Length: 332
Ligand code: SF4
Image (cartoon, rainbow, N blue to C red; front, side, top):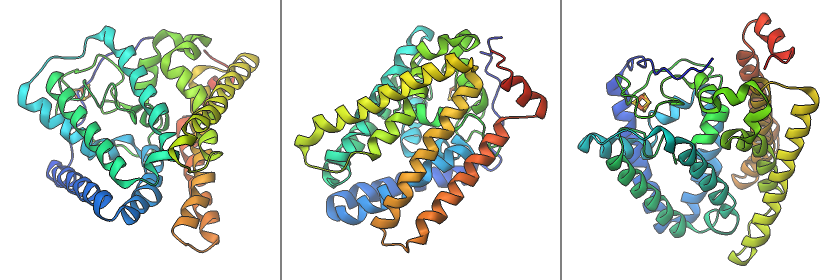
């Protein structure tokens, strides 16, 4: 059954605290941009080796924990609230989602030859994306223009946020104005993927949708990224080629496994999310340990904590024993 109804999200339990956190998010971003120009080594380390590795775990807990305070989301909402613009036309949603996925696949590999080591270029890119969030906020209602459509982080928030471990309120919308017709993570994270996949999830056709193809490809994308290394700009071609190969292999392998085992979309997407985030923490733990000069045991500690969280997330997502049986019996 299609679940497109947007129920009003729960009111934020402590709205003023979220406002303070949102202002703090904007302040930290401003400091980060200044740092990327003035002290790029430190700023890059704090961003890539401290802040970013925490985000996937935050998405498992609840993507709203990030979305409520994300500085780009705050800018998107500020711009939107000034003009009260229109909703995103329903027919634009698939193209907007694919644009976000394309931006993610374009920008993450660019870390290898640009963003991991070049502070000023990263700062200018963040400013450009912030400007885009403001512009699209001014053009469309609430999060319709950016956070719920072309944001490159949205596909990852969806994939890792499908079974939140904590319930959280929506700090931005006290009542839902249905700025997008379906899939808003701030209304109900667990319903976002079913709403985006629509009836395609009742067969293997979900693998041909934009988000379905992303979910199937993402574990390979993560693996491909960590099998490349930082280098100068002229290594861009080989970085994209290597990551594209692993991404494609992941998609093909997922097609084979899903069709051979007749896996339903619900179980397959959950397992793909667990695999992608597991691969991420397997590799990121070693990188963080090395870059921050931590004790060797830190890698094992980070991996253990991450895998425990992923196991809890998988268990939480499996629902009741009856649900688990239903999923394992390939109900599609
Ligand atoms: S972002 Fe849009 S769809 Fe989501 S809760 Fe707010 S108004 Fe509703």
